[in-house]
Image 1: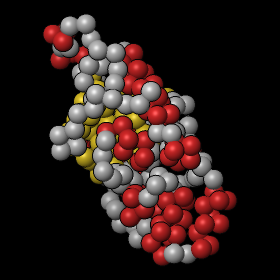
Image 2: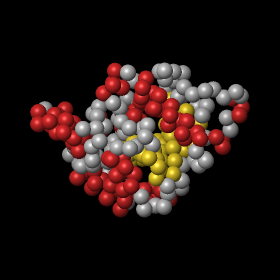
Image 3: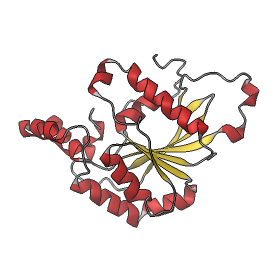
Image 4: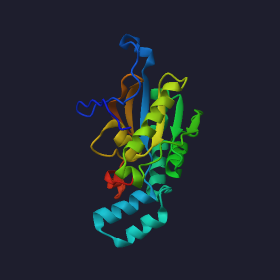
Length: 223
């Protein structure tokens, strides 16, 4: 079924259609988690998509076809992770007391989760349902909404009460929050989450500098 009962106020709140609580007064503060939605570092797919859209390079289409859905990180993406490790990611972990990191099954997300948080001693868990938007979901977005509900149910069931990182994909997070644009690579959208209210956007953190000429690829459909 489609997402419904969605409220937006300057893109700051999106209520995911989950089962309503029996009593709104039961929605205590302790039921609210802080979740950081981190988009993977720049991938080879991002670079090829930018070449095709921004420069009209036909050869980029062949690159996209050969890369497929499970794109590895680009050289620029690996550089982004190295810079993030040297500067902000360790501070980010300490400042926000991250308890758990979940990631997409796609290698660009696995590489990003491991590169940013792998040495921090926090558990890394692969979630099979937070892969990027598929070709079918462009036509039938309700299928992505089902996967979003799966993520909400997983977070709600976790024993960690706060500060969870989810490393995934631009289009998935865009749909989840009802945003107008895809976030930048290696950025973290800080949100609050509760079963009754779903996700509420708080602020964005940039974990790696946008220094690459192809960093603008964050606006492309294939993220």
